[in-house]
Amino acid sequence: MVTTLDRRRPETPPAAPRPSRNRGRTAGLFVLLALGVFAVYSLVSLDFSWASMMSSLDNARDVFALMDPISLPPLGDLAYLIGLTLGIVVLGTVVAAVISVPVAWVAASNTTPARGLLWIGRAIGVVTRAVPDVVLALAFSLTFVLGSPLPGVLAIGIHSIGMISKLFADAIEQIDDGPRLAIRAVGGSRAQEFWSGVFPQVMPSWIATTLHRFDINLRGSAILGYAGVGGLGYAMKIAFEDFPQGYGRGLGIAGVIFVLCVVVEVISSTIRRNLLGVHPTGRGLGDTIVRRATRDRVHRTRVASPATVSAVTVETMARRLWSPRRVRNAAWTAGALALIVGSYWLADIEFGDVTWGYVWPTIQGFWPPDTGTHTLIDFGEALLVTVQVAFGAALLSLVFSLIFGSFAARNIAPNGVVRSIFRVILVVFRGIPELVLAIFLIMVTGLGNQAGAVALAIGGIGLLGKLIADSCEEVDAGPERALTAVGASPGQRYLSATWPQAVPSLIGNTLYLVDTNIRAATLLGIVGGSGIGFYLTNASTMSTMHGQVTFLVIMLIVTVLVVEGLSVWLRRVFN
Image 1 (tube, helix red, strand yellow):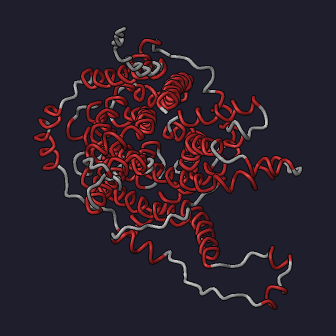
Image 2: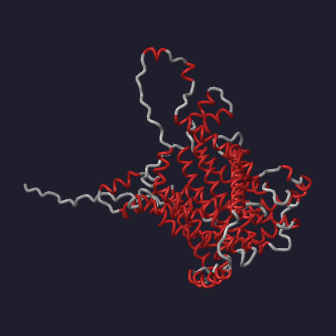
Image 3: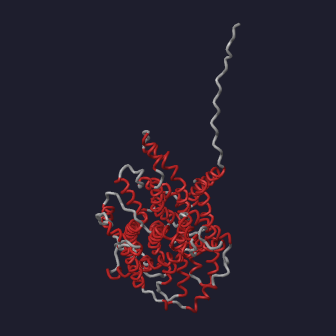
């Protein structure tokens, strides 16, 4: 009997399962695409073009030919103006940093005593971030003696509470809850939980955020001069009002503000690295100086004899030794206190400058909100222009920041020299006060919102580029090393390993820049731009129009909340 073997086809292996469609990510991609289209539309609607900007160079040459040479005030006057400006900024930032601690405590979901306080804390942060500091300064100036520095201190302090408390609350929500819960388990109070179990973990973040806000406040102090606050900003305002002879003096003072911002940026970065325990490892001059200045002394360790060990008691173990690091930290603390006292002396604060009889009537003047002689459509169109300027500037910043920020990252730059060059470029961009640049561009071009968008874009390159560089350096190095091991090129390593991990931070940081640009674009009305800043400035200077200020601020708060909500949602979707 002959049997035949059945010829069976080999079984087809099962198809690989398709990845489940993430509807949230798909929706996020559509939202990002819509935001990008709106940013392009914004530039088009603002009639932005590099050709129109370049065509105004002839006008710039005419202005330079008319004005006097660049000059500075006498040395004594310049020193006084610098001291007054630094005093106001330091005191305002310190006030914000102190107040932000209890605000962040109630705004963090894991430390707030009650759900109602949680929303109150977050509302305080949103409102103080949304109200421009120059509007606060204009409002405070109505109840203070003319020329008093207190309006500037309070304006900077109140406006800064929003940013510091928000970032501080975010840091609190990301802590290890173990120490806090352990203190609660042994009967510790809420205050003990916070100061012993929470604050030590988030103190580095609080210090870094405060120093970062100090940098921003120093750049923003230039515009406070337009609200009558003394210092370099006010001297620059007076100089620019004298056309064209005073323009040389105004540009000289603007140059001093730029140099001051760059110096403070370098100093604050050094303080952050020293206090937070991050020791520089580069070969550049700055890293070498910082490394030598902060190097701990080398101590020889000797084996303790049995007699020495037996002499150790509970009291001696509980006593903290004065190590070189502890001595250095105590010196930094004493220096910070001396700086605060010196700033109080330089600002020449006099609480008797407050005209108390005008305080309550001034507060009453801001309620109820109204549109005055304008319509809601007028304010809506003005807000749209402000948002367009913010998005258009953010798009320009993003294009250049992707290049500068990437080459400023240690794991992307081909060598340390390239990284240092791009880091310096970002520091220079961050050092230029956006509104000072806007004043100059509007002065020589007369293009209003176009010049404002370019000014915000240049300042945004410094901020967003630094955030992109930091995000790229903080990615997990494992995928990069794996691709390098199999022979991938630097471009392949960047696109396949670094970029995908940095995208969530890039989205959040870009929308944070939009948030910042909305508030900065609001102030362009003071220096010749349109948008909501034009109405806000006019209403702030008239005591009979403060209801319009409240209405416009509410519109800004809603806009900021929408942008912040989008940022939180998109970061959660793409994480």
